[in-house]
Length: 414
Image (cartoon, rainbow, N blue to C red; front, side):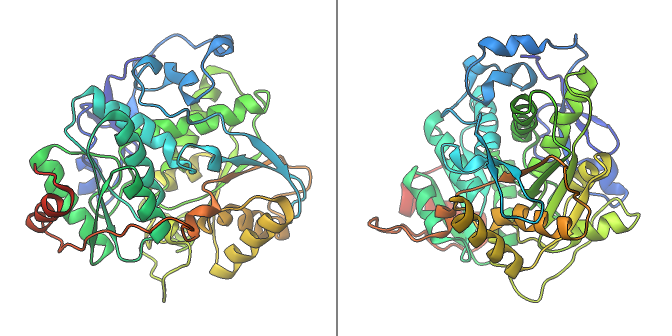
């Protein structure tokens, strides 16, 4: 591995210490732009692709480009997910990177394995996350693997199946009245107790922990390796705060600079709100708030404002943001299941709905090599047959209420 030496702002390259993962860039914030940080590494020799021949069959085969070595990883065997060819969408044949094959059945395992490994290495007392679904399940699983307590703040709209999944790993799940209440509580806990945050925990959201986002670079590495180092023309994925989008861009950018690949794929953000679409159409750095009249059925990507990091990844890859309606997602989800035998979470279907729409408008052209990221299993949306669902106690959005509930319901005292 190459030991990272700092964090830096994605927008202005201001340098911050490695323990500054709990903040945004102060300089950009003063300009009205909420920018995330990213891990910076010292200049080193161009890595040799041949070294991968004897590497482990997991995302930790790329540990030379991650903040920790494979020997120090908290791992469940995540990564190296298959590439599957499917048909039946507007473009014709396309390739699917099936992230439902990860240990907790979603792409969030890539972030969680790196984030929790780092948390363990620095002696963090607990893992903390604000999540309505996959990120919380992944954090809970890897915290359990690491032997660390895990606190998940969610809200009443979270899918019952995923809350049960979080609880099954031993996570201490608490429900607050509104989504933004989660951040208020976690900000206080991170500051007061040193809990390690894996997700966004203040607003406006800038993205997840920059240490963990390094795990998403491995999506790009794997796609390139599975493509014989001839990357696709397009990579399409559902986008909430753009963690995977930015991580993929960073991974492809590294490989272009190393000479491992000859081009950067065009990235597509399949979104619900239209915030990134508005940002791409305008000149402002910060995506605007775009409110919906009602909540989307795609809860895990249902946010009203995109992030600077997502916008930057699209601009720097000559990418596109596309706004989709619920009916587009349902149609794509059902077509994928009945036509290809792949059951996906409704949010994940956004990538396939985007393929249909962009192909119909001749943006994606016949003959283009297209990879769609299947982010999570359809089981995330279903009820839990034969297993008693596990709920989560309600709390008010203040630290005193949270600490009381942790003690009363989970016998956890800070």
